[in-house]
Length: 111
Image 1 (cartoon, rainbow, N blue to C red):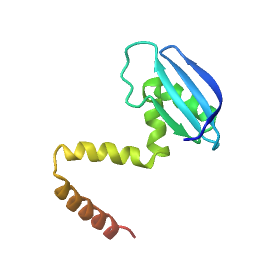
Image 2: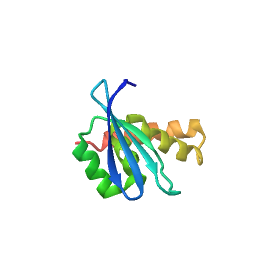
Image 3: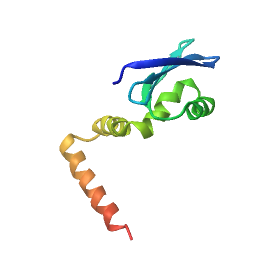
């Protein structure tokens, strides 16, 4: 993670959103709720411009701002969640076999 160079705030009635510019050209987004609210992910790093972050905030709200950003900006985010949920039902060996079977099936259906 890069060192912070500048910080701005976005306004929302339910949370404070702090956006810090990082030295590597990315931004760190941090959501601090104003009330007891479940936030699946309270911070994330992104290369998104400020107007896109604001648009996501307007559409998803502060609760799912970083969750939505992380789905495209953090390649491991969805993978970790999916793996966690699937391991509740399958052991790791069975899951690996199923992943291989799905990969083969998907590859076989490509034109």
